Length: 85
Image 1: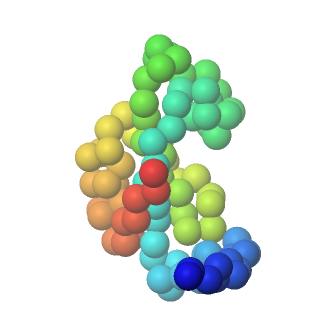
Image 2: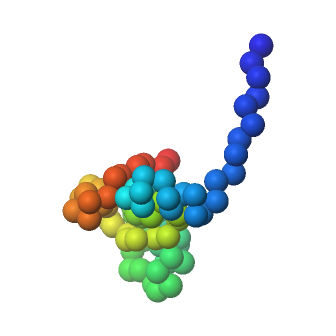
Image 3: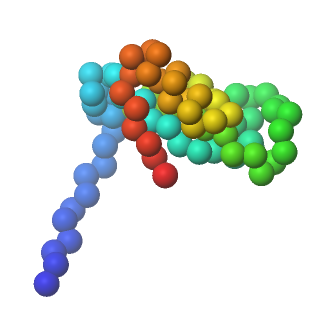
């Protein structure tokens, strides 16, 4: 029989402190979400998959047109990458 383990909510401040502020996560996003994040239109088909890099606390850092580009930027800025699916 398995037991349910209670899950703890992590606050944005706790997330920001994880990894000493050096963790960034990469996740795929659609054009619509990228436009919302940037607050500006993007000239790309709506079904285009982009890749966003976020600080551990959820603050967007950049949007790239490839996962490799997003990862390269994370590494160039001495951040520790984490992927979110």
